Image (cartoon, rainbow, N blue to C red; front, side, top):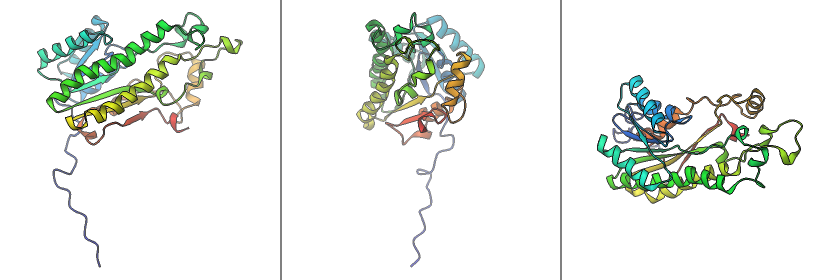
Length: 288
């Protein structure tokens, strides 16, 4: 007996043309004036979206918004916001609604990223001596801030019955830092700098927030996913870059633009059946 032919896809089951378009969608990007925020904004603008760059550094956020608007011919907005303060986040939402009448996307990008080379001493970064005040500050921005933005803006998305949240994490949210990357020749083991513990804990927690909210708001039309990023080349010492490249199958660290396609994918209808997922873009590092 000949098996029945598979059903012909109907327009409702076939991918929609331009499913990766963000035309007219308003996207709030926290940490909008940081290392990756402007690149996230450019990706959203290039897909037709309206980026709102929220940052504690108001002048920098305004400047980036103006640059993105001029480059892509879209509207863009820079807003001052301290994500650790719920009142600031509520004012951010009010400002966005007053300007655009809607909000469609939240990109939780803001985080402290303590640089090993910027530590006052090597001991500063080590668990034995890591300051509680630094721990509190890192958790407040990267994790509490993400929660507050999700609470305020996510509730608005749920109330309107549609929306997307992308929580930005790091390879160090799924892998322990390889502290050999940061070794300094001639120092004793207890004096070697390390990637601080707060960064890994915050970035792991970000995906925990994704998992929780993805099921919490599943029936409200709000999708929540994590975008996990590999390390970005940004002027690190040559010795560090050589060590880092040797640990990445693709043989290089990421460029700041390498995550743009993945971000647009998660923000758009191209990922309409994804929620609670962790999209890892790390050059293959986590495969080893």
